[in-house]
Length: 149
Image (cartoon, rainbow, N blue to C red; front, side, top):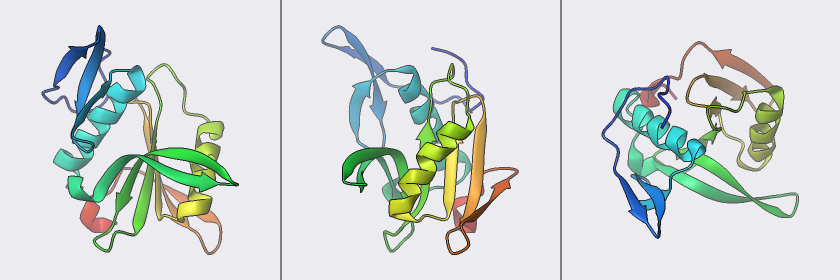
């Protein structure tokens, strides 16, 4: 798989039914190894190992209802009271991060009203702090440590 702009970690890759799978530490299960999943697994490990995000307060593929339709947030991060505080959207490395990508995650935030939106394609990472009262946001130079959010 492609080298990413994220720290490497020891991946657990296997084959099931003739398809490559990778172990997801949050779902505690093997999942299909797609380019987007490659990014997700590296990014989750980065957050846990480098930014001290507690794995127990993170969930992958979180289902929400938006305008009567079911959608899935790639990763949601929670505080100690299990309130959502961040939504993370992943794209394959070949996918450019555009305003349409941010529009997608912003729509998810209409339901969850989190403080942070994070987008990564494994090569570029963006984080913005939301002010849901004034419908404004501020891009941050880097993703903060969990203790700062």
